[in-house]
Image (cartoon, rainbow, N blue to C red; front, top):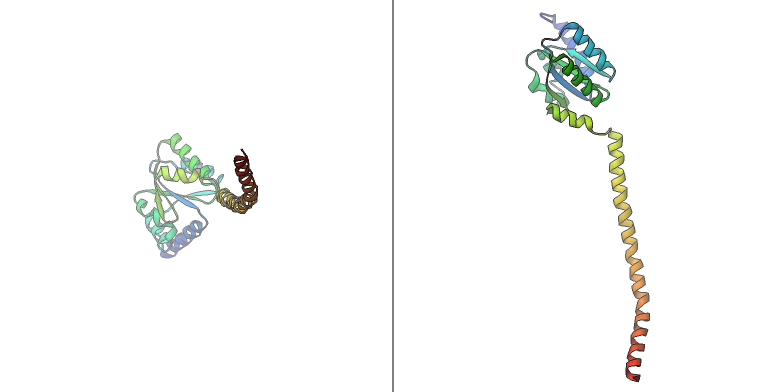
Length: 187
């Protein structure tokens, strides 16, 4: 980008901020050695998973994330030639696209990722990508809570039933005990 007018830099920072607001995760990669056609290929593949790959000066990215705690996690990775993959859609699809591209070109290096103010390694980013969608997780938690409530209701219902059976059994047991004593005395 070289020497840019202040207005152009502010415009870039505003564009990056708006993209960050729509993103779920940001991957920081070293793009040194990639050709323009390879970068265009990566960008085209990432578009399929609703992600954007952009090259922005680290100083401009620092300005863009300065007041956004959600992206503080990428701060340690802002050194050297950086490209940023802003993932708006499917995290696992975007991560797989990047990994396939990195394996194919062998020219790029994953530095780290940021999500909700956290810095992530590649393995941590993969673990997050492997999680089921938010809706599925919420349904699983709700199902677990419903199961606990059902078991509790069944258990609480069983207590009075068993007490009633016990109370009902007392006269019958008492009758059998009296009969046994009478049979013993008669014998």
